[in-house]
Image (cartoon, rainbow, N blue to C red; front, side, top):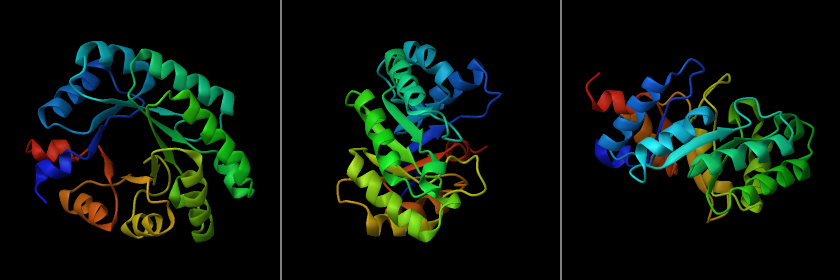
Length: 216
């Protein structure tokens, strides 16, 4: 798998709290230059990025990020606001407290509410795998498969760990056939990205791969 094939599956990501518009614009330019799957940026830049990019690159943004413990109503509002501003894809964080309490019905209802608010846009559900037991990961696969979401995503990249090949393979084993996988967090080389894709990932979330392609 060559670099460009991998980059075509990358959500080129800039979610640092200190990100400026100049940095976001540069990320948009780089995403266009390397034909990445999308650029994933903070919600406050979505409208400006949509005006800047037009239809030249998909825009992804985050909801309930990075902790996931805002109310479902807030996540729905964030989703609707992002879509009004021009987002094409939404990456939401589940309520990990509900998952830890075994309230998977609550997790399911929240995901369904956000998916409904997406109005047909792609929804990726971040389960923060590093915080879950093996049994909870399997349960998360089942719930996200039932929710109507488009992807299950391993990690925010802001917690104690990121994507692992083992988690991607576990997800692939336990999700429904129509659900896809996004591996994110700590993927800093093309070799790591290829390993995730070979394990069953369909999309990669990364901030470092485009810089590598540029020789930086």
